[in-house]
Length: 111
Length: 116
Image (cartoon, rainbow over all chains, first blue to last red; front, side, top):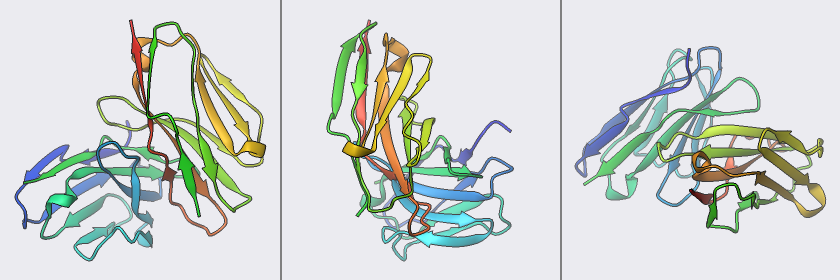
């Protein structure tokens, strides 16, 4: 296992469309995290799973956003009715202890 | 409130110079973890180091060293004899442990450019 993987790496969509991103964590890690990073800023926390349970959600996660981790392995992040302000890099991380290891990210552009 | 401040937005140095990246943090928790991550142009955040709040021992790893001082709430990062491959955005981050949160709180990052 070489690390956290994310798919797709890039996504261009039109405003109002739905998009879904996938994250595959490091296999032995039970914790999975989603962050969003806009240009010139540090990543901002969105949500966190321990196994299949979603334990923490940020106020940034509006009702258009939903995340799942159905079997405690991979996770999906869906954005419904995308807006131009959703354009960002979406980062996934996994961890088994105190350190979070990040994937390459999915860069979303909403036109 | 939890906050990480990286006052240096951009730093430019010439290869082989030493450079220090500053990080100041705020938290009311007595137990917390501090991190440094590197983000090269490819975009992936690479973990560099983790320190817990009870361990103020400084650490050296090759050309990298970290100075953790609780008295000034700082966790500075020094690169000795910088190289072009060190060019990246460096983020300092904090996880406060008092409320059981798993959220990493990041600074805004410092963009380091090492010129040949």
